[in-house]
Length: 66
Image 1 (tube, one colour):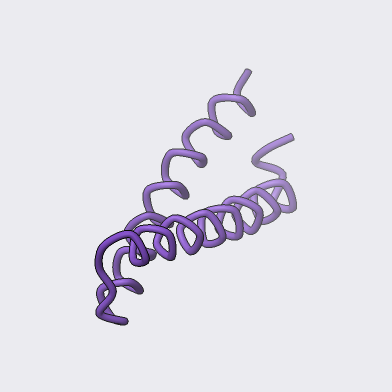
Image 2: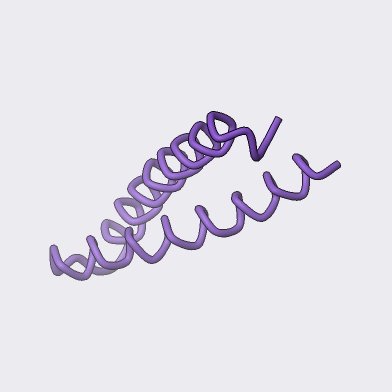
């Protein structure tokens, strides 16, 4: 149960950070409209998945998650 709760919390945190990072990238590139939205969505998903995979790997290696 503890592992499920930790995973849900990490999904929320990594998804939020991925969204913020994607917004920053799109703003930095000066994109707007549908093109900006598509690039932000794709970048946000890639960043969020990478953050989640890295964080869970670290926590499992440290023995804090199963």
